[in-house]
Every structure is written in C-alpha cells, then in structure tokens.
Amino acid sequence: MAKRYEPTYFSKEHRYSMGNDLKTGGHYLAIPVSNGLAEYNEEYFLLPGQYEEFMRDPSAALKFVEACRARQHDEQLIYVQNGKRGEPL
Image (tube, rainbow, N blue to C red; front, side, top):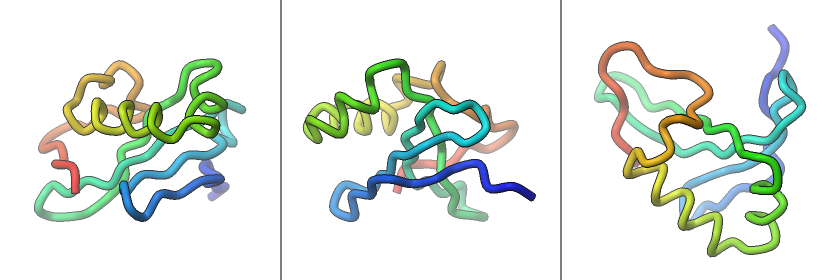
C-alpha cells in the first residue's frame, strides 16, 4: 500500500503535524484523537495558502488546530468517521 501522507512539520508541544498529501498533491494537518479503543490521527485538508501561512506563522496554525479540536472545521476532514468519533488528545 502506497504511503499517502508525508509529514514536513511536527509540533510535539501542541500535538499536531502538517505535510504533503501525496494522493491529492495538496497539504494536510493532523491531530491525534482517541475513541477509547484506538488512538489515531484525524487529517484535515488545507485550503490553498493555509499550509504556507501556517509554516510562516505557527500561531495561526495553532488557532486552526484548536478549532479542529473543537470540531469547527469538520468540512475539511479527509476521512469522515462512521461510528464513535475520537476525542482530541
């Protein structure tokens, strides 16, 4: 199976990563979540210009991360979960 995500940035302190989506040629941001059975990442596709902005301005990225944790950018989820959705870690 081909690798889809190529991480280019990781914030251990704020628990998120960003990188290249090799399937679409775009970019993504991922946050760790847990549904009680498994821990996994929720990946969000980034709109044109967001990746570059977030790489230049980590505070803008952190605002987006916090909004993702509050489920305010669900329209940008790459995979919509069926069933019990994980809670941010």
